[in-house]
Image 1 (cartoon, rainbow, N blue to C red):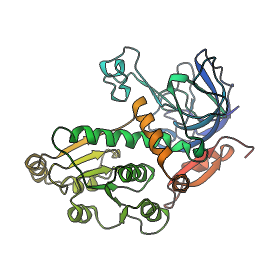
Image 2 (cartoon, helix red, strand yellow):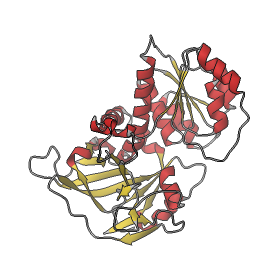
Image 3 (cartoon, one colour):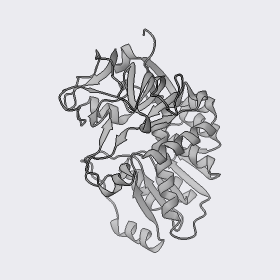
Image 4 (cartoon, rainbow, N blue to C red):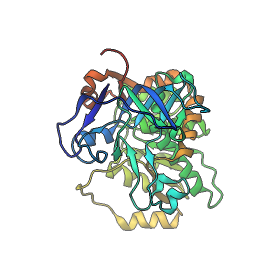
Length: 352
């Protein structure tokens, strides 16, 4: 079969290669790969920034934003041939640490977890793949074209869960949310905010193209003014930060409502400096009981939260997030793109 592979830490090694068909274990599903979402993590691995192959091989099958169709299930399985599924990315560490032992492997304390398509496990970027039944999540049958959005939706499902858990330390009834960044993570965060009945605002620098239309189609308000101006004007109760841009991060931290919560989901590049009035930021956070927290990855609970959110969403709107589809034979084209790209997807079926 064909698979999208890379040699981690070797820039320029991304290619579609022939690899052996997978052999399902006793508790595994055999899945026909349908589509694969491409994100910044995949691009960083392709550039050689990080990633680790499985033991005994130098190449890694990429891909963690999966969508497939069950071809074969073990006896007594809750899945049937033809079901749509997504595969969970992370597996708990073998020790396990306290978090992993309790199913909270997204919060692993010792770093010995593994991840499909990222760290020591082959990913889902192949024509066929296997997954342990316990790490397979059903995808609504209506989402055959957009179900690969499951994994990025888990990221924001966890972010919203963390916001709500922090808010519950006292009376918390948020009304207004600001999402910074209108990429897939930002727009999916906005979707989950709208589903919660909040007044959602989305901030991005583009004024044309699909991003403003997608935000407005949700019922959110779109902004392209500087982050400090927008945040100061809105005084949001909740901010989901999805840009990783240092200036945006500190601008929104300073302009939340009292008892505001900022959840950082964007990863900033290292090596950049920024002049910040640290005293003013500290004063604001302390005197208003504000909270800033980081959130990444997801556990099984968040996958099921994401599945519920996608099942309730408008399928045409979800399809609109996918602005380009590239066949597996030309998969490296998905790793370059323009400003109008929101989500680029590699299709794993067909002859292309």
